[in-house]
Length: 271
Image 1 (cartoon, rainbow, N blue to C red):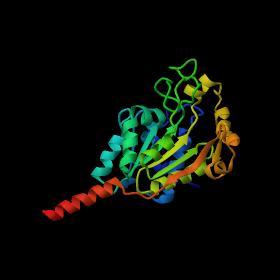
Image 2 (cartoon, rainbow, N blue to C red):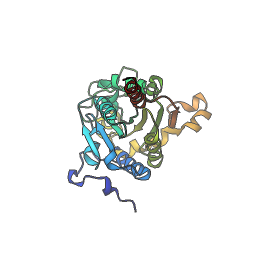
Image 3 (spheres, one colour):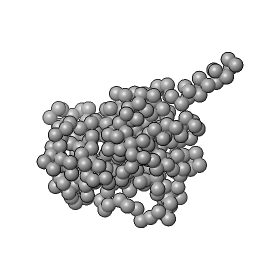
Image 4 (tube, one colour):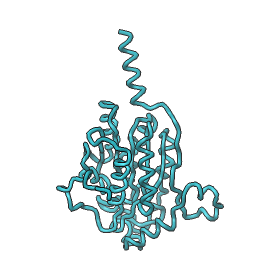
């Protein structure tokens, strides 16, 4: 039987996540991926910002850094450049990464620096008041949109690909085994890797949008997600309301920290 406690700081339990939140499922999928890849805990760093997802580092027995709102990728960039040998994982949310941290997100992708970003997407600011986030679906309610959001939402996976990331995938917590595999692939990729993770928030999002019961949200994920392979074979009519999951983009590109190290070596040779 798999021993999750090998990677858990039990002294920090019980956790703060609400009943029905998917963040615990993500945590377990991540731990299984780390164990499968045999990553050294001493050579792995987890960095987060602010939000429900960003509390994850407090529960894992790795090198961890809990930073300020929206700045997780900026801190992680510093860690990676200081010691390029480290495996650096960023745990963030749709608000933390793509609203206040949006500039860091697109420019880290543009640089293609070797970070693995696990971006929990629950369509709302879950911990800080239930406000509209960049991924809140148009028409859905939030504390700052009691009559429904008027803004169009980001395709945050498409944004990462367009900005220059090497690897982009989307998974969800209903399909936890698939999620584990996607995280493992992202961790092994050299370059900026993003796994967008659809995770239910029954408290801040569900209650406002007639899906307060956790089972209802999990059933939505079951019924509205489809593998990218199947999605590509569907008609435009069949695609309506469906979200494609799996590896969305995977390309080899020059990686920033390696290029930076090579520049340093070239300059040393000129002295």
